[in-house]
Image 1 (tube, helix red, strand yellow):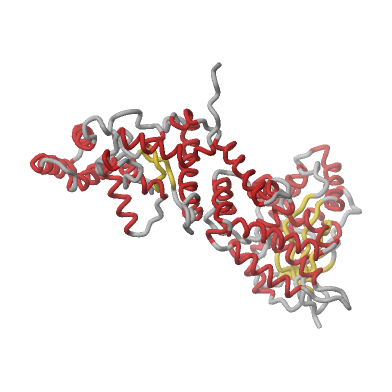
Image 2 (spheres, rainbow, N blue to C red):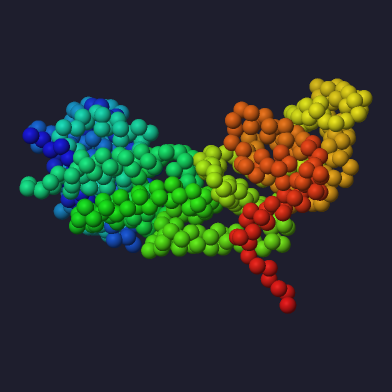
Amino acid sequence: MGKTTGLLEERFVGDIEGKFFIPAYQRGYRWGVDEVTRLLDDIAESREQSSYYLQPIVVKRMADGRWELVDGQQRLTTLFLILQDIRRSLPSASARFELEYETRGGSQKYLKDPDVVGSALNIDFYHIHKAASTIRSWFEALGAGEIQAAIDLYTDLSRRVKVIWYEAPETTDSTDLFTRLNIGRIPLTDAELVKALLLTRAKGSPGQPDRSQEIAAQWDTFERDLRTPEVWAFLTGLANSQATHISLLLDSLAGGPRGTERPPFHTFGALRAEIDANYKTFWNSVIDRHSLILGWFEDRNLFHKVGYLVATGTPFDELVAAAGGKSRSGFDATLDDRIKTKLALTETALSGLSYENASGREKASQALLLMNVETIRKMQHSSERYSFRAHAAGTWSLEHIHAQNAEALNTGEQWSSWLRLHRDALVGLPLNEERRREIIRRIDDAIPTITRETFRKLEREVNEIFSFGDEGAEGDVHVIDNLALLDSRDNSALSNSVFEVKRLEILRRDRVGSYIPVCTRNVFLKYYTDESAQQIHFWGASDRRAYLDAFRDEIGAYLTEEVSEA
């Protein structure tokens, strides 16, 4: 009876042995100059590393003892050709394996001596010959150091360069496995390698219980939980899905570099010894990590604070480390301190945040997001939550609540769009009817043949109407009491529009179910302004003062004390 659980291990390239059969369902050898050169350079440039990992080799044992090479044939073929070339300088060196392509008779022989005559026989031999020539040129470029380079590279392949060797169960359908591994050219992930090793160990030895199916079911449950869009965005700040989501837990357990600095298969390498030593202890740590983060998600208070920190760039594993050994209240206090440190604003600095410089925009974005998150978090007897998924998926930008001019618009299409938006808003504005008809007529006449001069003149007149005396023009329009988070949808005409145009757009989006941050909705519905001072179609000085007061109320606990000049 064949094995039902795959075997997973590390192997030095020099320890790979046997006969490999490359079946017809795979395309032939296609690596070019760039791929071959990159492999050679990467191995040579990695010599400061004690181990250097190549992509996985996936095989399945055949009835006649050969290996069916399911994935990795491009790499393994190139490694064979490199070892063949090394023999020129080091005759004792040799590959301990052979390859044969089902679709190419004589491939096993040609790989050992890829001459130019044979390269004309078929496309596979052509690429094999090209790769061999590239390898030869790489060594020849080293001149007098060629022999030493061959010795060094052979030493690398024998003692330092490893592959992740995955022997698929004999019951596996090879074609299905190959297809799964190669959809979008996605190789085995760290998570898949960890799972394969974990289930191998959980299979147990004779006389020991088999827990592999139990753990596999739990693994699938954890993956499903983490694929919930709101959970994933809350933990990562991302709206898009990835190949595996349980990798978030595994990466945090493994530690080490993040992002592009994280070496391939770092997580698998870091966790392998722990899984080998005691798979039960390791799996319990995964269970604990899953319980921890779902506990954060279910706790409405922690959800908003953790979600805010993640959305503004704090890595998930940093928060896990910060929670270590703390009670719920202790972790809550730590989150408050982190938010305060990240915001790093006094009340004076908050009121002076400006759209006109990069640092001001970044801080204003953080403050606006925090205000939205805190507004919802502090709602009493409410189950409402800020949607970090919608936040991650949107193209949120700082928008002027009331824009006084449209200087940023430079094309006829932009000018026409701006005029149409304001024409529609004029219809509902409390205005002398004769003046309304006259300005609308002039806008309609101008749009078909709009020019810069005509647009600028109409823009000044329209802005005067929407400014309601000095109300809309008072103060610096670029500071935070005139800014809100809005999904701009790359609409420059809307971005440069007055309050009333944006208010009508907010109402339209709300009617169709678009996600609008709570404070943005509050602003355009005049929620913060005292009833006695409200002018529903305009945004003025009293509105801005009320809005800034709301900032202080909602995020005041995270503002730092003013520094005395004395």
